[in-house]
Every structure is written in C-alpha cells, then in structure tokens.
Image (cartoon, rainbow, N blue to C red; front, side):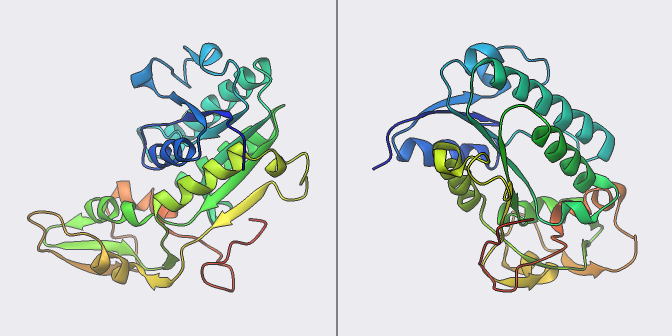
Length: 254
C-alpha cells in the first residue's frame, strides 16, 4: 500500500484539477489546493512558497483565461517558471504537467502555447513528467459554443479519441504520488499520452455530448476556415494529430 504523501495541485478548481484533487484524497494523500480562490497565484507567485512547504510532488493543471496563442503562452511560461522556482526552493521531487496530444504538430494557436509550456517546465531544475491528454468529453459543449453561427455549429473536421477529464486526473494523481514515476528513474520517457478508448469524428462527438437547455441547432464539419476567430485559434485544443495504433492504449512517448 502506498504511503501518504503531500501533493500540491495547481489549477485545483479547474476541469482536470478538481478530479486530480479527488483522486489524491481517495488514495489517502494530503492535498494542497493551489488556486487564486485559495490565495495562491501561479502568475504573481503570491502564496507559492508557503503552499509548497513540505510538498513532495506538484501537478500543474492550471490554465489561463484566454485560448489565444500569445496570452496563453505568457500564462503558461510565467506559471511554469514560478512553479519551478518555488518547487526548487521547497525541495519538491517531481512535477507532473498536463498537455495535449499532437500539440507539437502545430506552429501556432493554443497547441504552440502548450509546447512552450512543456519546454519551459522541462528546462527547469525539478524533474518533470508531461501527460499529453486527448480531447476531453467535457470540452465538446464549449467547442460547440465557439463554432456557433446562427442555427448551425461548425466544428473542425477531425478524428479524435475523447477521454474523460476524471480519467486524466487519476493518471496525474498517480504519477505525482509515485516516486518510481520520476524522470530521474525513467529519463528517456518524460512524456506520455492519455487518449480515450474509441476513435470518432467531431460530428459524432457532438451528437453524443450532453444536450444543453435550448439547444436545437445542428452541426457540420468545417473543412475551410469558416469558424469564428475564437474557434479557429483554438482548434488545436480539440485535435490530436497522432494516435496510438491500439485504441485506448497509452504509448510511452509523445
């Protein structure tokens, strides 16, 4: 049985972060919730030193308010430098970062911001594991809102393997609490993947997502840049560029 450890979660109230917190507590670990609502800010650094005192591992699941490349890049790189610096001072043993499958295939947009996030974290003094997750089931309604034009929602034409945010949170929790998962022990595998179990098109993803009150519009795959600007700049967030050969199987490198 794994002994209890003290783990900090940045973005503890977010889509993935709150599942990570739940998974850690279910396993008997002590959790430090890092969020602005708890008086800790990864951008200004306020409260980070106190929050990481005595912490063994950190999960970075924090996200900024904008999906645009430049502000998202500034958020991720600033947060990464602050977390790495505070973690070094607190003698944290490892950091686990959530990212996106296929982000390295894009030259711009949110995917490029996530690659800058990964690189900044991996360049720091504290060992890092990066978990690249596929599109979340829970993100589909937001993608629908971004692509709405009148009675029709335009979605990127793609194939994806949706994954539940809870499943990713459980993986992050396991890696953060497991000293054997440290990159120092597995230096050739700092990046892993977490796809869902079945491939489907974006249109099928929309049809299987929970309905929202008042939604009667249909959906169409967009093969040309007809999606409004917020969606076109955020399309990378929904589109894993490479998939493992076996659905549901996590490969070792990204």
